[in-house]
Length: 429
Ligand SMILES: NC(=O)c1ccc[n+]([C@@H]2O[C@H](COP(=O)([O-])OP(=O)(O)OC[C@H]3O[C@@H](n4cnc5c(N)ncnc54)[C@H](O)[C@@H]3O)[C@@H](O)[C@H]2O)c1
Ligand SMILES: O=c1ccn([C@@H]2O[C@H](COP(=O)(O)OP(=O)(O)O[C@H]3O[C@H](CO)[C@@H](O)[C@H](O)[C@H]3O)[C@@H](O)[C@H]2O)c(=O)[nH]1
Image (cartoon, rainbow, N blue to C red):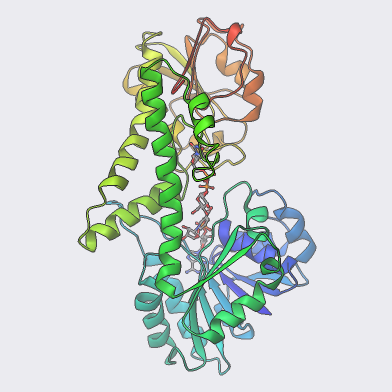
């Protein structure tokens, strides 16, 4: 099938490379010329395991990038993989989606054949049919249902395992406006749907939109719940990891997303939970539970710093922050809990020396005044205390000999040699 993909960030690039791998002819349409040049040179614009080799294999044959929307007319299906950021007050910002839909609509005005437009971005219920659809109709002069079809197909990939998640998903959710649109998507995804492990969910468009938010809200809530239980466990002097490991044996609960500690960050959970809260309020419903999910998450970095302060007077202290990315395996620092830890440490007068194996350059521009070390050992050298903010595997081998005080507060339950420390405190154990 001839497929075009608008937006070539984490999702658009991964989807493009994977669809090319499934044998489709794929065109990436992207406004950033550097990204276009990178893909056409056979390289990956983002770091994801398995992506570089797929782009290298398909670029120049069945994968190509362009800044020119007109080339979309040569394709049958277009995926919108545009950003859906949050506004300053946490609501969903649809400006990039509107702009992309307008450009696409103008392009489709000059296409005669059938075309299917698929929203893959995370959008609130109603956006596909009440915002994107009308823009497409207005700009193209065409009618949905008359050769122009629209569908919503949310994406569940995680950063750092994006390729594997796309090609081997638990589920594919298709919300289509017509049986024809659903059929085209089933055909496009055929090799993935043939896997026994992939469940196919076919729904109306607004259910598909909400499934994505419900999925992320559920996972974020699960982590906040394990964090609250962990905080309670700590008060009782109990080990939350032992407790939650036992709880996770109940298959109604499952043992996944049970790691308590510093909380959730990243480019998705914070903005999606906030968009759902803002959307719910707009609909007249107060999402009290989701409000609490966010406030538990906001408190964890403060709790970590308070715990350190019980052992190290923070005013003027040199504190090593180990890990900056929002989770291991990525250099993404968007809404990373590590940044909140840095803020709280600095508010309390500490001098921060930070280390991360890959994410330092993404933090430095916003935090030019803190010190950066080029290894964990260097960060710990002379430190009065240290905190673990990201569970990078290399931190399991930390050595503490160089520290002025061997005090470590661990926000992620890494596997360190606790006997080598004077003080080891876990955030929830
Ligand atoms: N990152 C994830 O792990 C993930 C997973 C699932 C779903 N999502 C959702 O997918 C969507 C895209 O997320 P992302 O992380 O890929 O975003 P991103 O910011 O990494 O990429 C978006 C890309 O779109 C390009 N772009 C912006 N306006 C454009 C336009 N008018 N025409 C062409 N290109 C344009 C940008 O230059 C950028 O490269 C969001 O709704 C997000 O919530 C993200
Ligand atoms: O037991 C756990 C599991 C996760 N986290 C934290 O939760 C955050 C999110 O982790 P993860 O879900 O692995 O990262 P993302 O790449 O942001 O993926 C989420 O967000 C994507 C964008 O919407 C979705 O597609 C994915 O399904 C969804 O898992 C990170 O800060 C983790 O440190 C914990 O604290 N404890």
